[in-house]
Length: 330
Image (cartoon, rainbow, N blue to C red; front, side):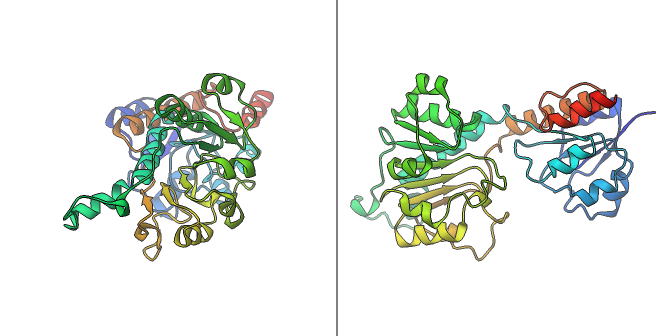
């Protein structure tokens, strides 16, 4: 008898076909909420789940007694209760590596667009305001040679730092990470306490995962430490930043500008001032949103789930303890 899978994110025809070859698949391509009765009925019989964007709460897990593995089509897994999954022996898999370079591209696009005021000045032309040669009122800031401060230096942080150091001759500082001797040798990166990094960097880029320790890691105090003219980039999670403090720092001129791909509330609230500030470049969480990368992420999730349900270790496993307990009891 085939094991059952619940899929609640769009998959390609070939990916669906591969899953259906080995499993019974209940497919919810455009699921808006986990309160959907059909989804809950399917989940109650599921051995595996694949999807992204919707939270699986401990209460939902209690309704899925046969569940063995969850494969999220993302690197972040803050929508999933890791401890509750581990206690139940349920494997949680994610998709690092495949989106590293694409997300780093997005981060550097935000750096460039914020520094050179690309969106603001494109709108300047669209409004018909370009009536004479531009003056200082339209000048931006250089990127090359400026100091790039990375708060977090995992795979994505390192990829951004490489672009800065090797492509734009930017000195690299990093904090909130264990020492990275290889990157220090390769890029000349220097490790700093976060307060010192904030005071020295021209661009501060956040790439840390969201956790209890990093929620509102950057707030009014931290913005106050940044040098005049600094530009703030967030491609991590919106809740890593105190958004009210960010808005105040931008409106007061404490920050020169910001490039943001993530927000406390997503989609961004209609009354948020952020997209209306001239010194903000705001994107709708597109870090990995290319056809090639999203396809690769979904394929990695399919591979992870297939391995897990066949009793093999997934390529990317978040909760090693669940695998260890399965090996012990199995």
